[in-house]
Image 1 (tube, rainbow, N blue to C red):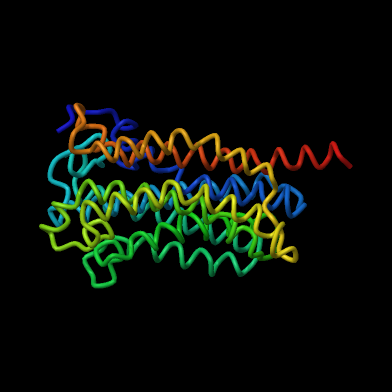
Image 2: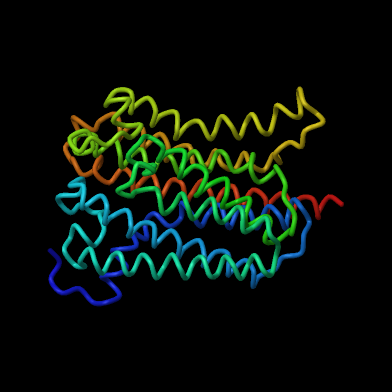
Length: 318
């Protein structure tokens, strides 16, 4: 138990800030994509509202998840990335109240954005909020506990985040943010899987089905490798397949090759994962989800930089 942390530190721990790039990077990328590729005028006020709404909703979902994981006995001991309930710095009642306040606030911002932008944002937002609420619950609809957590974060913190932020800037839908965000969304699954891989024993004991518990330890290693290396393959396919075979489909700009700068970090994570049983520092595996979140942040930043670089090159060559 923590010894009387300050109000700020207590709630900072509870929202699990290390995970927030998973939800904020798609918003940033979708916005930059709309402005640089779609040539829509940048609306900074709407961008700030969208980013703030995503952060607040994600924080509320994180706290809610901590409550139900603790009640199910899945979180028994604090680890470097666990929330406030298992640490004993907030009660379950406080956590539920805080989660409700955050989710209601986030939904309110979403409704304001819908009023300012258009009805499609409401439909995108409803899907995201429902997945956030039912990610961990005591009902049969719980996504995490029935092997659907990976799909939920892929959609919520990848596809829907990018599509929604594109729509906020553009006022219309497009398949471009949906497809081009898939590599980044895959890494969000990697963050969750690293967490679930570490927790296979406790999840199995609690009769919780995650992809990690379904695949087992060896299968989880292969799946993790697919999740952290797959995005590089997808980037290359999105760049070169349209150029070589499907010329009617827009190709990703060549500047997305910048994402290869993140490959050394992926290799480092893969080595840590492979040495999980023999490493002299067991913490390497325990904090693999946090390190994967850092990788996701780096990869997402490079994707955003790629779009900005493409815009610069386009202007210089015109």
